[in-house]
Length: 604
Picture 1 (spheres, rainbow, N blue to C red):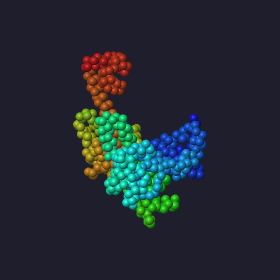
Picture 2 (picture 1 turned 90 degrees about the horizontal axis):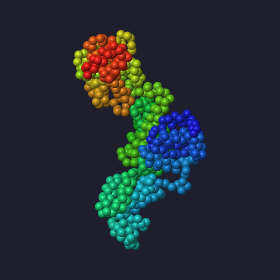
Picture 3 (picture 1 turned 45 degrees about the horizontal axis):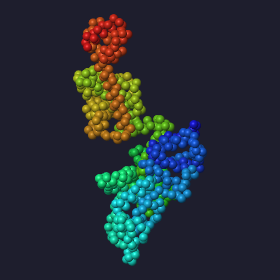
Picture 4 (picture 1 turned 30 degrees about the vertical axis):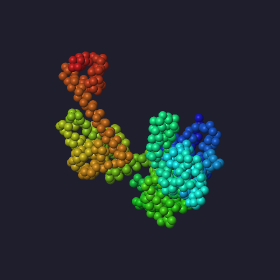
């Protein structure tokens, strides 16, 4: 089917969408929100609108009217569902199905009364009651309520119980009391303190601390099973499984927070700093904006946060009340309280804001790399220059590794990277000539001396960075070679230890540990792995050659040239032994092939 055409702007935005849960918003040419949707995978879901013609006419019309899009990433699919619901109510997009009764997701409320009630509701009344949720799965909410009623005998009647009501003695014990589902609140049979302890434990469960509830369910299942009441045990088992999948509160929507503003930072130490702003209205995120700042005078995070708050206030006309931040900004704002959360809903909201700021950085980097491939190279080299404290960009890097088995056929390899990528035509092998036995340190010194003495004699440009594989010992030998050649200080030199990815610098006994996710470390690991692979390959070839030459040495009528021809063709003694006389004859002729085949057969 034909695809819907996307504008270049939309193509670029869709190309860098993350594969994470989130909510996306489509805008028409006038900048109006025309559709809000949720997605388990943002990239896959948004792309699906444009890669085919839809059966629904309304959807095709929607796609034709999309001029721009924005999105907000969230931790889970459930959070995306909650956020979609709140944003549809806020913007009332033209192409969304809007419920006429504006029905919301249900909450569990603990009322603000002398003897609180606990029940399910879709209405939020600001009377001091506590609301928990929302629950996207009503069956889970009802299961939680049923189990709470089994655990704690809370009242279900709507009688407005007050001290005055109890004094008048008008209460009458009902059926709930007689079946032990209520402790007689309306007649004062249970005191307020004891009843309050029940409510405290119920609040603990509703806050997500469900360990007690899970333990109770398991014990009840085992008890019913031991009494052979398998049907009832199965019902509790189903409730237990529902509870396992239950998340008591949404990170994105929470009536425990109300109206707040959140500013999340993403600062990786570079000049570019991203600040995400989220406006939370009645516990729901209704706006998310990410600002990008470029440091010019090494401004602090607190300064940049102050700039961001001022810009948001002027752009959207927002008056801040409570602002959730990771640190207090350098800005004077009368009547504004700053909260630095360590745990709870506010901390989770701050985490989501920081995640959106970080995602915007990733999107920008991907866009730059797609539009300008040189941008990634420049960024990578700048990062390596900073990590290794270099005076210039490491456009030319070389890495050395030794290979020998019990001192036999010692070789070394040199791999070359240019602009962060392998330049395989410049790779070099070295057969160790002056070192006797398995002496890796002396071998490294010999190879470096031969390599850079020749390059200087031929007038070739030296690399900006040399990496030796092996840590402090190998690095010391390399320093000696550089000192003797007079290039220490001209060419940067580091060593990489094999076990812990430690980077050693000359004269410094304390290694550098680069971030495991750093591009610098990935390049160095790639260098080391390439040098090891290239060296091992050459070492195996030398061993095979030595074995083959030794196997053929002394066979009358077989000289060095014939042995060399067999080595080039068969590569190893094993392959030569497995070859037929006709195969050997195709290389060296029938007469010599007969001699070789006969000799190999006698030595088996």
